[in-house]
Image 1 (cartoon, one colour):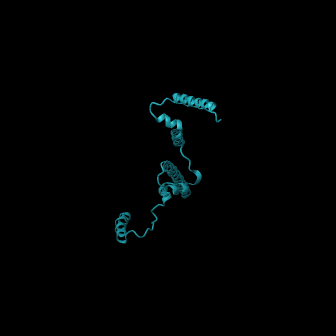
Image 2: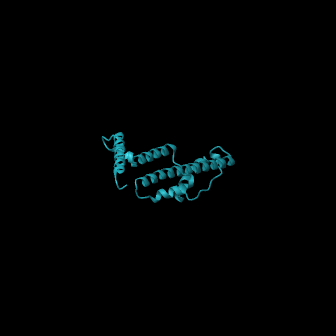
Image 3: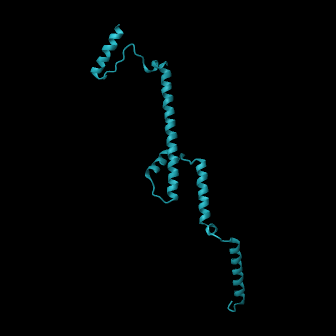
Length: 156
């Protein structure tokens, strides 16, 4: 009966005071006891939660830095303006930023394709209906003609 009176009157009293006082009565349990643990176990549990949170945050920061590295790479590749936020994310992660292997392979392939396209043979292969062997034969024939003409030249 005293419990009922305390419950009814206590609830009304808290409403009047706005719940400003947080005094625990003898019947209420601490956080550790409420979860069925001793105080020491509860502290270990809290410490473990903090460590896991720090690991998750570090992993998240690493992923953000990797993404920023990729964005920076493509900005440099396509000559786009730099983003300060990406640079700060990379700096916050430190020197641990490494591209994922699959992404590194893709970038390497792109670089190889670009290098091939920029070479002379790559440019020639882009031209339609060009026979490279025929071009080589013509170049050699032209060199031989020049050699013959220089032999016949009276000045040399």
